[in-house]
Amino acid sequence: MGFFDKLKNSLNKTRKSFTEKIEQLVVGYADIDDDCLDELEEILISADVGIKTTMKLMEDVRLGIRKKEINSPEDLRPFLIKRISEILITGENTTVVAAAPPTIFLVIGVNGVGKTTTIGKLARYYKNQGKSVMLAAADTFRAAAIDQLQIWGQRADVDVIAHEEGSDPAAVVFDAVQAAIARKTDILLIDTAGRLHNKSNLMEELNKIYRVIKREVPAAPHETLLVLDATTGQNAIHQAELFTKTAPISGVVLTKLDGTAKGGVVIGIKSQLSMPVKWVGVGEGEDDLQPFIAEDFAKALFES
Image (tube, rainbow, N blue to C red; front, side, top):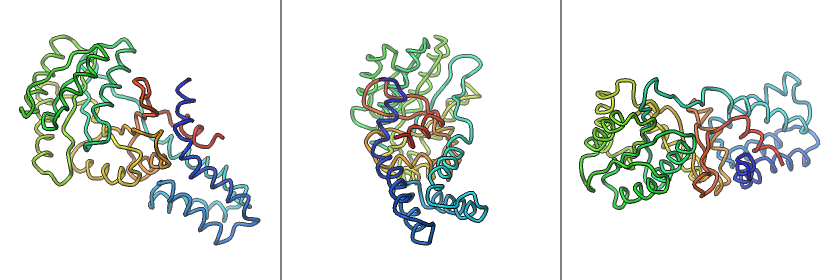
């Protein structure tokens, strides 16, 4: 199965809660009245597009009605497809690549979102692209996090720089950056502890890691990726808002898209936070993490 087909399959639940309900709405109303618009608003919210994004889309719909771009319920679907596609396509999704190796990725996010697994899959992706890859096990606080990353390192056949559990994460990062420079490694992926917004000591640890990276490679980290779990819907947007206050996030990795009806959260992240979604996970397989292509996502969301 090609990746587009996997993406389309992963959005089945979202399509049922979103696109198919819009189809039912179109059939159920002869004219666009207040009840029709109220139901459309409920559909958007239930797909976890988000309150702010829903309100903006509803404003666009009402403006479309006034401008005679929408004259009947049948006009709602193509109008929304066009508007949502515009939201998704806005902005830059490409990954930054360093002029000279290593390109350093700092991967952050709360525990349970699939952060370490994402790093393992990224390692495999870049290895398949012919790049040399190294992993840094800087999540030294969570039991078995180092072991988990080392298992992924073995699967992808890449080196893992690790210290003992409970050791200084910044020291791990320092050693990893030095090793990546010495070996001219193309990609260095750094795992970090699952940081909660109210744990000031953990946030300070993240800042310390930043300082260590920048001291050794001033242009780095080239990417700071925030891993979010699509199944948490609006909570994912809330997490993103909190992390932006601490870290200059360059993009989002959205995991577990195949297990949720809340795929509309992608639209909310792009619209509310102006934050690019750079990678999406559409399954549990090692090759089921791929770069986010907005046009493909929009097509897969609306295509039956």
